[in-house]
Image (cartoon, rainbow, N blue to C red):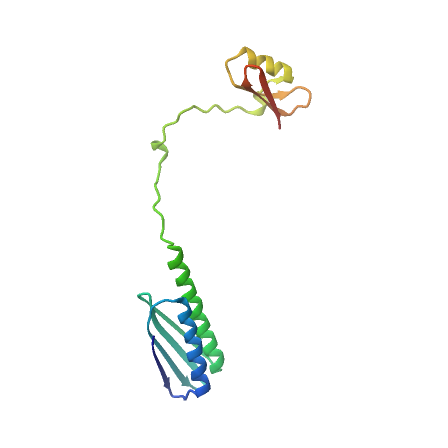
Length: 169
């Protein structure tokens, strides 16, 4: 990693330089190829402006921030860059490419059945035994009805020739 630190209209102390280098070294933990890192610090009217530019994984990253406190500014900008690097690493690791989507229109669908809508009021009232008898007499596999005893919706299903299942809502 090539690191270039430039200070304009201000002096950066050794303590701050060591801190910056330590924070930038944390970027290397992502095991991404960092080509160049440029850090520029300007001071105008007691306000520091910092710009961090780096190139990693063939992408350019630029972060600019302003603050009156240089230590706070260093923390802000370097933490933000660490966050962006973590996002890039996660994106590369997950291979999050958009998946192709097949669009199917309603006319492309061929119905295999027809739908018949009935309201609950149009259903017959009968007991479970009457529903079972009606099911045995017809070729249907199910009967939907209103239970005469409870006034609840019920379904009689023909499992096989000798078994009928009753489901109440």
